[in-house]
Image (cartoon, rainbow, N blue to C red):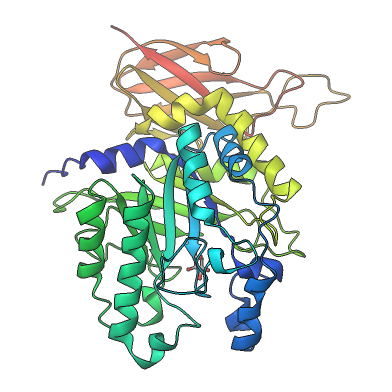
Amino acid sequence: MAIPTPLKRVAAFERMGLGMFVHWGLYSQLGVGEWTYHIHKRDKDEYKTLKDTFTAEDFDAEALVLTAKEAGCKYITLTTRHHEGFSLYDTCGLSDFDAPHSAAGRDLIREFVDACNKHGIVPFFYHTTLDWLHPDFNENFDAYLEYLRKSVEVLCTNYGKIGGLWFDGNWSRKDADWKVGELYATIRKYQPDAIIVNNTGLGARGKVGHPEIDSVTFEQGRPTPMDREGMEKYVAAEMCHTLNDHWGIGKNDFNYQSPRSIIEHLCACRRVGANYLINIGPTAQGGIEPMQRELMRILGKWMGLYGEAIYRGKPHPATCSHKKNFLLKSEDAIYAFIHDLGRSGNANVTVNGEIEGDSVFRGVSEPIASVAWMDNGEVLSFVQQDGVLAIDATGYPYGMSTCVRVAKATLKK
Ligand code: GLC
């Protein structure tokens, strides 16, 4: 059975490849994760007073956008409203539990979108569907759903063209009628090219929940290859991932991913054609933790060397002798992602002395003209015969170690 052709918006989303997730809200002032209201059983009225100290004085939308841009991200997904029910945007009278009615006194999503547009980054809006503080969520669900729909309508009509809506929370009431058809119809009415995502959560990664969904989610877990044969609609895939153990800032969460881990997860996503959405959790008033900024900066350095392969490459069916290694293909090239290379140097200073590693790929029918490392142009010897491509993947030169090294094979004309 045929694989459906992706809609234009879905193909464009897939090509972006790398996004930055941003979890910021009243909870950030407490520094113990975005679920603190629920998990720590906080008093509702006391929690709501957090808006009176939410000054957003450290929030610099351009700095946030440039952090993503310098990391090689093409889009940013920012929590416009999380489960606490506080909106970073002007809800236009729907609620006074929003940024214009807080100590910030301004529409933070307006600033975010303006900065995105100024720097060519596509703005995506994360929006909770559940609401721990809204009385109707438990007492009058249909009225609550209309509040939710009108809230999303504000986002779809007040901020120009947006990249997409990223919903999260339907997993909280599995048997409820969330009237998603009405919600998605509202989006389609005003933002026909917006990507619609609805997080299926940790327990249902990769599941398509509705015909209007444009991408499935793999929360905190590496995406598996999607079998799209016979599907009505081609849906993209995206893995969302924390830098440490929390989405919203955890001031005492030191369990950060290494740069290598971030890079390998990104590559594992692209191996199956999925996007990688890496998260930062700004500080109480919207600043960026230096550690998080630096990790994004290192990611950007890696993308500076190999980004072409991440953006242009699509999954290649070849298999490799080294299980972590894989190929991506574009119209005019093949990219070989090589892991665990050693490095040359000196026996007295260089660990992992093994500096060469054959990478043998089976199932490569495209005739290869030449192969070279993308980072320094070093031409690599290779043999191709009967669909087998063996690349002499030389180790890193002393002074360099990029965690995953990418070689570009140009095809014979
Ligand atoms: C989970 C968490 C939520 C977070 C989301 C990000 O749904 O409950 O807090 O925003 O994952 O994917």
